[in-house]
Each structure stands twice: as C-alpha cells, then as structure tokens.
Length: 241
View 1: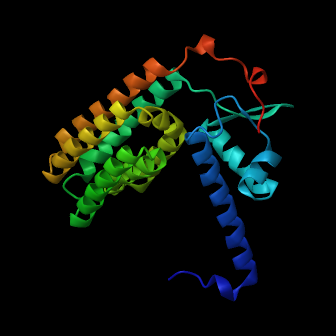
View 2: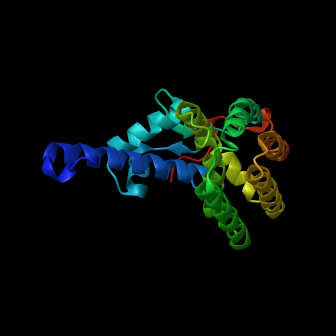
C-alpha cells in the first residue's frame, strides 16, 4: 500500500523535493535530446533553472546525473557543457545494447501476455501518427514504450534498468535519426516486422530483426555525424541562452 504522504509533513516535503529533482532531470534530458540545448553549448545552472522555473539545486543534481551518463561534460572553472555527438561513443553503446537487448528479447518473447501485445500495437499506431505530424517527441516516447514492453517482459529488472541507462544516454542521437522522414518510415516498417515475430512467439526472429533495426540506425547516424576533428572545443561555441 502506498504511504500516506499527507500524514507526515517531513515525508511530504521529502516527496516534493524528489519529485522536483526527477522532473528537472526529465525536462533537461528532453531539452538535450530534442536539440533545445545543442552539443557543446554551455549549461549555466542559473539559466537552466530560470528556463524550467525551478531553483538551482535540482538543476545541479540533474547535471551531475547527466554527467555520469555522458550527456554533459564538466570542465573545472568553466562549467557544464552538452557533450558532443560521437560516432565512436554511439557504436560502443550500440554494441552493449546488442548484447543486453538480444538476451532480453529471447527471454521475453513467449512470456508476453495479450495486454503487452496490445500495448506494443498501440505504440506502433502512435509512432505512425507522430511520423505523419512530424512530432518527434511523441514518436520517441512511443518508440520507447514499444521496445521496453519487451525488455521489461524479460523478468530481469536489473537488465532492463541497464538498457534504460543506455537509451537515456543516446536519446539525442535518436532525435537526429527521426528528423528524416525516410528514417521514420523505415522505423515504422521494422517495428511492424518485429511485432509480427513477437506475436508469433519467435524469439530468434524478433532478436534478429531488432539487431538489424539497431544497425540501420547506427549506420545512418555514423554517416551523418561530424568527424571528431571537425568538432570545436567547448570554449569556442556559443554560451547558454
């Protein structure tokens, strides 16, 4: 049973603090993922706090979390900057995802129930609608629901959480991929194929299709990302708004 937060002022206060910190982290992740804060842009804590309408402490905690995830970089006496997009970093992350997600898919397929399959089909419809309206945020959210219905269905919560961390660290790459209509159409077609394999209970086919799905995105992104020697140092880019 959930705790009665209203019965204890101290508990209510702690809950409010945790909620603000979580909301700030989620919002800041979204701003980076959608390009509102661009690679190498400085993130001044006071400016970010004003943008979101919160105090500085939750922003500071969010930046520390994002630094641990590799989404922002801290330079002594200079502050936090959005991390640059890196083809090498992306390739390494996708290699790790291949291992974890293939295992999760094999374990989940056949164990998913009718509600899980309905959730996946609904996510596909939402993604297709988001593609037509060019709503990249909605497409990203529906894409995550589609895939994590499978990953969570593996019954290995620690593995699913590891996959979530990897996804959080690469959401901004995903937004770059979805910006192209051709890529969105490919994603939707690949999701329908994965859905068919999952519905048939064929874990091997689903895992294989999922690997191809990742590799198509990685190949396209690798071609579009700037070369490492083309990326300026943070001190040479525009500071925060």
